[in-house]
Length: 546
Image 1 (cartoon, helix red, strand yellow):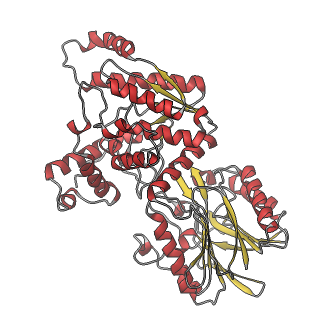
Image 2 (cartoon, helix red, strand yellow):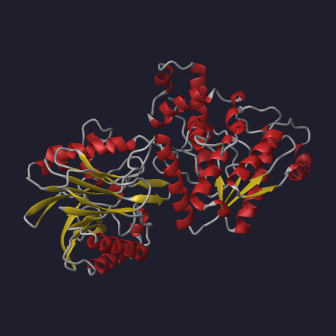
Image 3 (cartoon, rainbow, N blue to C red):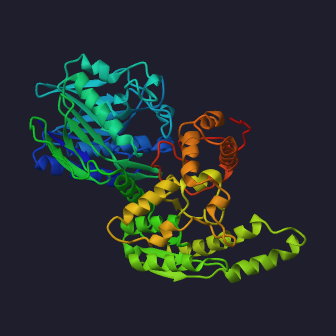
């Protein structure tokens, strides 16, 4: 059977724009010879719509939009994800559903059985679960309809114990000919191989081809990678769609020669790069920005961020600003300028010494007799924040913050200073991976000055300052943070991994104390299993010591 996979990039709430994308993709795939077209989960509304569902007309408008799409469906069926109202008085108000559409009508509706409520997911807040997956008979074939989480039931998965029902196991006893999965599965590094194994396992269990269609694009902090895949009944991959971009492909499930995109499987750093570029571009453009602005300190974090920005928007739409203080090193100033020249972006140098001096003088009468401390250091960062925000306003350019996950975790950043901005691009990228990504960017030629990569990292808020004056080496820090934040290990468990107790307890204390900063940070792009965002809901005021 020739099945069309519509891996398209929709925007949450853009019902008109999403409708046009759906219709255009359907028409193209039918023109190419598709006998069935499958779309991602909740493609009509975009995923995740969250509390838009509680707006008085949103769900009815979504159904009206679906009806307008269905009117354009010919004799070639399409499977389209949408929100269905639950007309009964039992359970949650809506269903996460898939409409089987043909000849201008909705013939059958399948509903999602397993509703993820962990990490970034909170579907149980909105949706009622179906008791079993739907099976559709068409052209002497039986199609099992599943939606995203419905196939995430392998016992070794961390959340599989949440479910007492296994839709794949259920379908394995129904002699289906095809298993369809409409998905909106957000990406983090390391996830793709796990997902491919799930699809292969489902194919073997049901003894039929599996067609997995995943969403692509950035919506808020989430990045959807696509990587749609088709397997035969043996679980062998016969089609792999490109990652991190829209694609329409036609797969003949009876053809033994695989159709694999060159970007279906690639190096992890290439995936991270593509993911951040996609997330940055979509966040800015879906919010109405086509130009971005950021401070260039001469350090590794701003260097990686500006390279991503140029890739996302083109050099003509990126503004770099150096804001040296009286203690900024010569190499930081020159590294920033060399980087801007390498990228051919608009570049400005705005010294902040006079601004800092003025603020210091203004505060002098109030601070008289008090010892200088981090307050004076932070005046530099906050002066930069004021100027960068002013430029952002004046030029209608989205200000990007450049802090990484390691620094954000321990509060090694300044509120209303370097944390100012509309998007924290690399805030889920640990410092060591920032360095790895910088070297990957320079794999063919020097884009980021090698001096930026090789020199010891420093915030340069006091003379001769180095990050390791306040923090352990990043190789140690990042692993402690991974164990504490992403794996939820206690201090004692981390110490038992071989780390020094005094270091572990200091780092854990810093993570806990700086929750208030992270709550006020710009939204970031999620690329690890657990980011500082909607998936991590730690109270600001709490006294638990692990």
